[in-house]
Image (cartoon, rainbow, N blue to C red; front, side, top):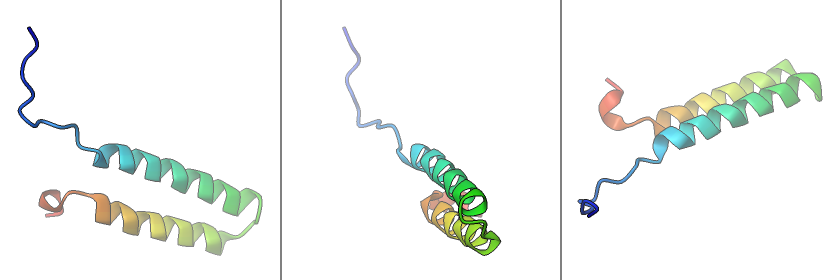
Length: 62
């Protein structure tokens, strides 16, 4: 007989961080190889880190 679910849900933020890292990688590759812009690549990384900081759980920020 299966155990009852007590509301223990899988948190989605780790998957969001993985998706964000992939999007940052693709964005930087496009910026450097297609548009050849270091400034655009740096802005993609900065925006990615800002979103990363917002997604990171509050209790782990220190």
